[in-house]
Length: 259
Length: 317
Image (tube, rainbow over all chains, first blue to last red; front, top):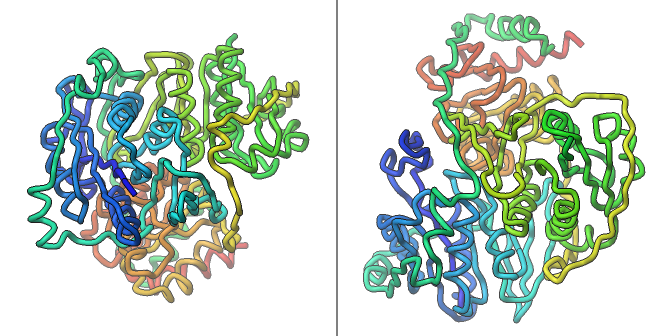
């Protein structure tokens, strides 16, 4: 079983995030860079699948030079190899370009499963797994909170607003997993050391057969016209409860016509 | 006037509120046309017409029950190529975003997700980074595919009627690549859906236990007809199920009224609720950052304030 887990380096979700004034892209320097939290569930799921049988887990990421740290970090959970797509022309790429790059990098490598976290904590679009599935022509097995491989059949529980759908497909397939699918492990000392020596391919756009005109900010399918920080909210009324707290909230809710 | 396609989200014909909101939004761009896939169109037609749809494209068949996402994309791809609409508006649900993503790839067009407004010239407004930044963006290639959040606009009843146009649905290879073998419904609480609710009552670390949610938070929610939410501290502690988590890694809500009880207001949480129209806060700690968002706040013990409030709300009925 060959599994590829796609990870994204994002600003820490506990920090304030900002856009860059000059080109309206994410200000990556404004916060600590971490592996997207939801991708850790994807790595854990991949490791569990190969540990239950056999196989290898490869980590794939597209991002600036610093994103190599996140590939190593993800490998240190117990994965075997890494692929890092890095090219100055990629700066400002949107979801369509990202999915194009990932699909190109994945093509022909013979992965049985390609696993994503269901969204990134910065852009929160939740579209890239579906787009990669569409581009590669592989079954879209997304929003899973349970993943089971039985021979060449893949079964997932796709989370829905009423519960879940049990969905089946053949392999290879594109999977995304939701938060709390599993309990991601902490990297062991042994695996942290192994990750430093794990094979890592660093590829440019040309290496995956794409040219700069199909990606990046200038070629994006959508553009930011302008942006602004949300104005701070006008300070509301805050009182200290002296036995009348509920009564005061009640009065407020009445004036606002909620009750 | 160009058509604007609106994908209708429904459960066997029962139309979700967001769909009617999208029809109102589409009317500001062009002529709204509803796209209704799956069973139940007969019962939905009048409502869609009454809310501004001039045309309802209907595609029905077993495919929409057997397969996920892709059959709907196939219908939209066909309609987009035939009608060249000014835009395609899709509810910003999990399914909706994936439909939008695949559609964008198929028609080589830009996609914008989680819009809260779309102007007549199809500039979308988004609240990004949990509402801390307001972005205006525009699709620059192809036909704009935009997913729109619930509660972004009020539905408008026009009293009109819609013309039904049936669309043949063919099952593509991509659609049949996945098969739904079982649909499992988990028990419903009877409360409104968290992401659609007009009022959300949330609890955090200060609630203290699962018992606290059952005896303090849920009764207030029920007295207000509200959905229940929880902070990450509360769901991580196992006091309330994870699917009710409001925050950066959970649900994003934008209700008319958000009542935060025993929630300190870390960025994690604020990112999921700071676009709420009105915020009421109950917290012991006067320095909790959540008070910065409060329209009305009480520094006090939620375990005495909230039950008292619940009794007062009930007594008014």
